[in-house]
Length: 99
Image (tube, rainbow, N blue to C red; front, side, top):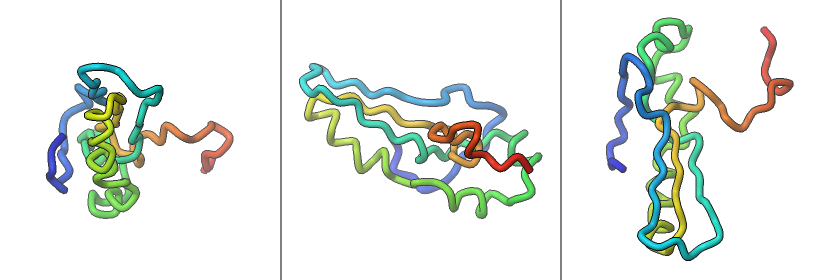
């Protein structure tokens, strides 16, 4: 996990998410940060009406870093590399604006 606040722009999402596993699993929890991704596919940016600065306002920046200590406590940490503006994994289809 990097400490950079910068977004990256790439051709695609080669690594959409990451799972950081503890050496020994001792906690019955999985911590997840699904909205802290900062990797924007070029095609997505080209198709968006919003610029990168506007899109970045939907990020939960650094949540994966706040959760990082759980790995040393024996719990795995999963975090997305893709931004919520690209794919919001916590939304049901009926919650999306059809327009």
